[in-house]
Length: 166
Length: 245
Image 1 (cartoon, rainbow over the protein chains, first blue to last red):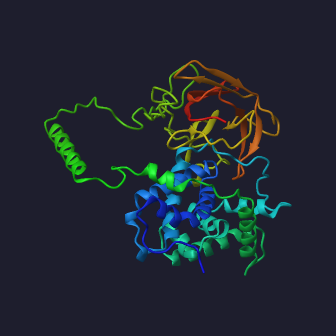
Image 2: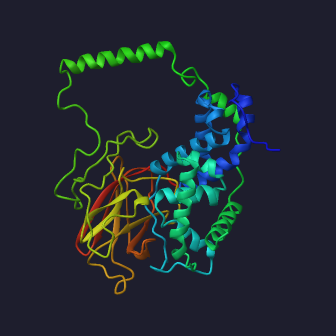
Image 3: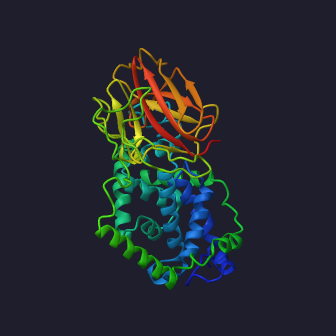
């Protein structure tokens, strides 16, 4: 039994708040992942207000409420990232050409950062934020098939970067 | 499941586990505050008013009331002379970006990376696409600027140097000079204010390039002109500092 919201968006603030409540955690994770240098909570708050203002445009036939909210969050995160980006941050102490370190997580993050933006977005949504393929497709505004092929391309490119043998 | 998938899933699970708890909002209050007549969708009255404005503007335009001296947007100030030297106003392209009223009463004309500089090999001809930036400067001193201009807040690094500035030069050999004699000065353009930081250190970029790094802190928010000096070369650009730690 899922607690995730279903059906049309409620029209009162209290009901709407209850309806979106279960999605706030995933919205926060997505915001943190897509705009790591911006304020995660600000992005979520902007997304919630935006969703409330656009609630009548939500159509259950076009996707789940979760996917709709996540797509709005991704849009706000993109805006925040462009608006509030600090100086580009080359990684300190990374030796050129060296990928593998004692911390596999650093290696993976480093390798993922080398992917093309769409591939990185797919990997971020699916593997890091933990979205489904359908939700990732909503965030990327593409079909589920495109998400799957983008993820496959990303894994193929990551293989040599992570020094995984064929 | 392949090794790559397993590594991604493990890294993702660890990343999620390290995330702070979900934010807690008073959702109902937040949404109530966001509610208002304009937020509910444009009314017929608003639509009619907008249509009237469009008609008036079209009429004015048709009768040539807008001269060529009208306000422009974006990069009209692009100069073939390239990036500026200290003491001169920025000749690179700039925006008429208006920071929020709490920051500065005047617009901050942040520098755009125009003309775009193409550095010598082995540096990449353009920064990796995910930086959404271009090189700006000359062979003797260049940096990377956001295509929309630099507007900084949401600091990543802790004090005392919450902002890192990165610079490259064909004259710099990181092996021979790991602590480059570069200085970065800041001059606030909208109000009094200044700083100077240096020398620098070295940093490796995620695509393999090595940069001169100078950490700085801004005494105040506002519109700042940063000027780097290295081996007789100078490079300046204007950045907006929207908040600080």
